[in-house]
Image (cartoon, one colour):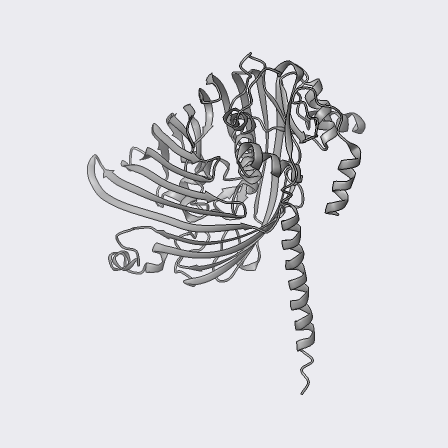
Length: 165
Length: 390
């Protein structure tokens, strides 16, 4: 016997399954465990010891000035950048959505500032280098120097973007 | 002229950090849609209601690392419970006394936000809510904003790190204030004209955030007193003492967030007529929910929630109330809401929400929107919302 009504139904179920698979696969690819992240700071802050507790206090925007009195200026990449996620996990032991929740709470209650979101690692390097009291993060380089960030390696950035596309 | 205006807007839409004075400008706007069966919620929703929106814009200025000022103007419309008028949401001066990695403390003064549970302070910004509608713990359909959610006062705050624990404290003293006319009629039903004021009130929140926010536990308390007065020739006055205790717990994993909150509200109502005690009523209401959020990826989140509220915790099915008030439906005394929802945030500015509520009971309805008798005990509601923030 023929049940023509089932065909579009099956099609719909198949579409739903494909959509779910896509969602899950894109979710899985957002965790890129082989990304290593470096913290970068303004040249003048070379002597500050950045342990996890200070980094957490800085990136949750709870402290506002460095020990020498310079105002802290925090730069971050967009939340959906895999590097953001990796940095928050590796160095802060936190999830990006928990940080975003804390920032939104500050912004919409008048109790604090949100970090400045930059579009790319290149912009991150430039802003951190040129802003007194700045802190941010970039992809780790083999010969990394915490205090004197070199321009990012474009080739690597492009390759990574291809991997995700 | 138009170009100049565009340049000016572009200039104020970004934060400034080049000069010594830092400032930030942020805002949000969201439009909701409610379609319900049988009962009305946030407008004439049984026919589909767009009478539900929220928007706000704020500015924050840091004149020194330890001194900042912030102000937010907001509008919100939600059926009969909010009227869309422009209001000052907060206006606060913040002086940081102590600011080290391990310990921070400071003072705030002005019109401040009261910390109650996880969501109260940013309750009108959908981007900070787990769903379009907040659970009954937050009384989203009773406009109490001018009463307890934000008010003029002074606040002391502090946080310290002890091993894996980050302990934070907020304490607020609120000055006596008037209740807006629009809110008065939602709180007290009286056939003669009256005035309602909130006396001095106080609010504290203690929070323990463990291991970078993996576990969060909070206790919040609000204590206040409402005073009602009528014209001298009527000489009816009232005093309503309110104590709110909110217990909150949250577990944040990579994909899953599980949240549970419980509020216990003690009301002690006294009415005096011609100087003599006329009515004394003590009621303990409560509400609680269990909610699970699951992040499918960086842009999609689904959630589900079981949410219950009772107007009298010693009369959960409302039978005693119905017996004492002939003609009143017992089902006005509770609500059980099962919710599923989905949220899509394609980028850092936009957000879209959809959720469905299956509800038993009508305690969360506004009487003025749903004149008695109760139309239907079991009802449901579809809510949609689209929002933008910067």
